[in-house]
Amino acid sequence: MDAKDNGNQGQKQPQEPSHLQEDLDERRIRTDSESSIDSMTRFVLPSLDGSPPKIVTLDEVSSMFKNLRNMELAHEIALNPDFKLQQYEPPLDSLEGRIKTMVHKAFWDLLRQQLERQPPSYDQAIRLLAEIKECFPQLLSPSNERALAHINEVLDDAVIRQQAERGVLDFKSYANFVINILAKSCSPARDDAVAKLREIEDVVDTFRSILELMTLMKLDMANFMLALARKQIAANSVQYEKEKFSKYLREFHGNAGFPATEDWLKRHRSGGNMDETIYNAYMQLLDYPADKEFPELLRMDKDRFVGLTWRAQRLILCASLISIAQSTPIISQRRENRIQLAQQLDIIVQDVKNEDQVPTAMESCYEQIRSFVNKVLVQEQLPAMSEADQEALKSHVLRLANKASPVPSLMAKRLDGYVRVALRSNGSIPPPPAGFVDFQEELVAFIASFRRLVSYNHAVFGEHFHEILSQTVGAVDEASEAAASGTGISAAGQAQVAKP
Image (cartoon, rainbow, N blue to C red; front, side, top):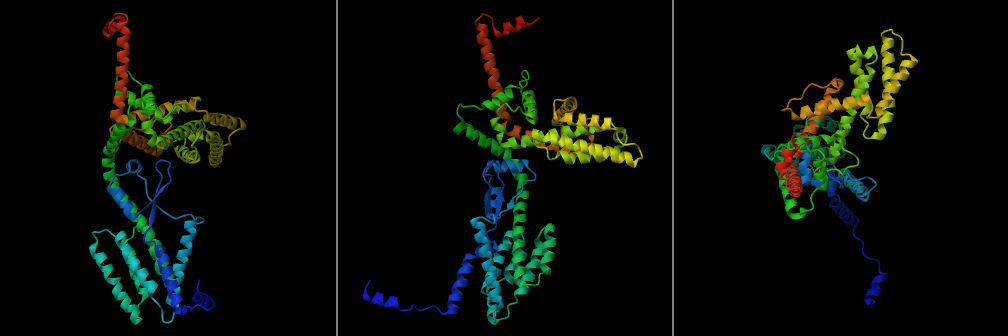
């Protein structure tokens, strides 16, 4: 270091003027705070295969719906009518969440400081209005050209800057203009939120709430795009998945086979009728053996089949419970009492999703039945249940935890027969079997979900299932021929010998 540098070290460095330093700080906050108005709002694409949820922007959502690049997404949209995108918010205790909170606070604090100056400074306000204008094309249909032109005219950056320079910019009036546009373009579900915007007097709080609402409206638009694309995706996703599966077979599968799928189909072989075999195999998915590996080709829908299994089990439990409850005349002879009790029991068993939860649920159901029956007996001025009757009722109800006991077994057979008939019907669903009448709404919804899942899956993999069964039939025939040749008797001759 030379003498000149040493001399400079001892001197006090010149400071930026305070107003210049303040301007630099504001510029830095403006740059760092662009995300505070959520111009790049992101959404959560729910996990479809156990992997972490994906975070996507509105543009990515649009591209995703136009181009079926994701087989799991197409599959989910086609099969799940309730599938929706969710708003993404980083956890508050995460680094991203803490940074977002600090940046947003800095952004709004600076806006308030500038507006409270004398005279006011509108740099941050102008930037805010410009980015709000940029958001409207994401909230309105592209065909709504007149509305977008009007917004661009009113929120013209040059005009707003001229007003600010002349000191006549009415920031509140722009807030009211934006609110009016939102009121005309939002979904009915957001009407209350718009009404609340009009009640806010502080202009900074108004704009903060406006941007929160615009973020929700972007989510509405993303899910609206999903709804529009759903029919097209459903129409094309079967062919799309078949093509993907064929490509997989060509490029990766080789001769490895799908042993669990083959075993699943072979276990339900029904003579030479392949369709009957496949049909019986699908029916087993409602009570799949725990000791058997789940078919590889159905694993994308394993959680759905498991969910349907427990919907079926809950229906069986409800039908069993109401059948036992009808041993008391006050239930069997009073339709309104039976319906009311059925609704209460249905609510109790909705939390049952595994075997361990069944015994506890049955205890709760017994208490509900006992309490309900005694209540209606009192209302009709009849004597309450005796201790012996209550003990007998408790014994019957708690026994339902074992699905092999007589009543659940009977109801399971009735449901199985009903599902088989419903699957083969052409759109119409037959009347519910005995015991299930009071649960018809859930029964119909269950049948619709199972039929949709089976139909879709069979449309994608049905040809391959036939191929698997054809190969196994051919292998059996070849083995039969080989065995026959060892004795000098043909397969045809063996058939003749076997005849009485």
